[in-house]
Amino acid sequence: MHKSTVVLFLALFSAGACADNIYLKNGDQISGAISIIDSNKILVKTDYAGEIRISLDDVKSFTVNTPSLIKNETFSKWTSINSIERSSDGEITLITDKNKESVPLTSSLVLSKSKIDNKLSELSRENKITGSLNAGAAYNKGSSTNEKYSIDGNINIANDVWRQNLTGAMLRNKDDSNVSTYYYNLGYDLDRFINPYFFWRGYVSYQHDWVEDIKEKTGVGTGPGWQVWNDELSSLSFTTLLSYQNLKYRHDGNANYLQGALGWDYNQYLFAKKVTAYTKGRIGRSFDNDVSLDLNAKIGLMYNLTESINLNANIVKEKIKGERADSSNTNYTFGVGYRW
View 1 (cartoon, rainbow, N blue to C red):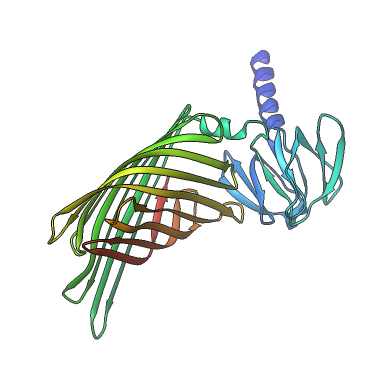
View 2: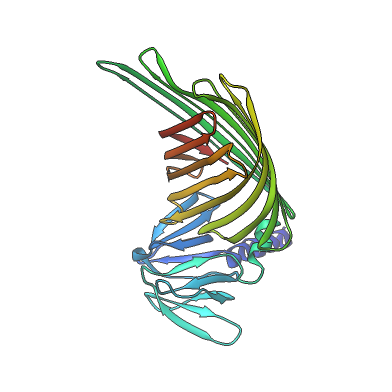
């Protein structure tokens, strides 16, 4: 009995010793894993309350027991540290291989748990499945009746040097008895990382429209991509794609052509991941005169109510200028989302 008590005490002590600790001005202490520090907020993951955010204004000092990146002035360069020790009130002590340095707790302090060496490699090789599902609806009855419904989602699978992303969306607008917008699309991307920054992408996409002159669009393509960065605070990537496209017109046959396109994907977390700003899209044109512009772009904001549930607002722009017909949709959506 005595031995088991000692083992249990040592286990609890070790768990507490490995945790990051936050010392508050009111005398309380919070233990957990600090994820990021940004916008004067500390995001800490705890076993007993999930993710919580703490204002730096309420913190006397804190500790971090794992290698991290930190900067303490706006637009300053990232500094790699081994750990952070508690210091006097209003300060922390940064530990590196060479020395210790005390720095003040200011609103411009930013911390990320990514390692500075090969951080992209580690993130791209992490095995995980994430996804989201968003739905929105609006109804207005006055001199006319307006209805809008939207749903979109994605599943992202990261496995070693491979990354897969499956997306889908559907949107329908109705003004009185007239359906002004009604389409759905599906997409699949497969990335293979050659090194931490460069990857090769293959993709396939399909869209069906019940209203516009272009009723179907199918694309299959491939090309190189560049992961500019990817960490807890933001990510940015570009792709250059060569693809084979097929358009089916509602009244005038179809068109097959080769297309060159540039794609982008940018995410920025704000206020310790309370808000997410993002934009994603692709712009291209054919190598002949079949299509002079092919644009699919999305920009949005997400406000996280909990770890899983959010409110989101998006602007989606889709436009095709073809030789025989055009297709154009601009939609503003507001809805509730769930992510995992």
